[in-house]
Image (cartoon, rainbow, N blue to C red; front, side):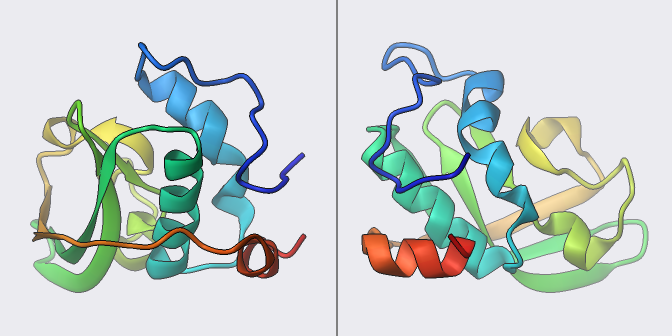
Length: 133
């Protein structure tokens, strides 16, 4: 079950940064009632606590087929993987829209544009409030 971000559930190995391991670490938080900014704060806190290098981003996502463009937050891992569990909230529940941990080049119809931002880790109390523990 979900706990504080300091808990180590053994799903991450410092020398391996695979989509499956990151999804195992973050996937259970998908059910949180948060939009992209809250999810990015939660995920960044967890990744920081596990020593996983990453860059939070703020910008926009664009769904090319419909030209829908929305302001958005997401995470880019240093190996190029992206973490975004809320793109479908704004762009629709289509297989063409990414969800989870993925490579951006696998989703040609969605374009991410933005800049990396600095996010401080959440306190344990705020973390618990946001994930409703």
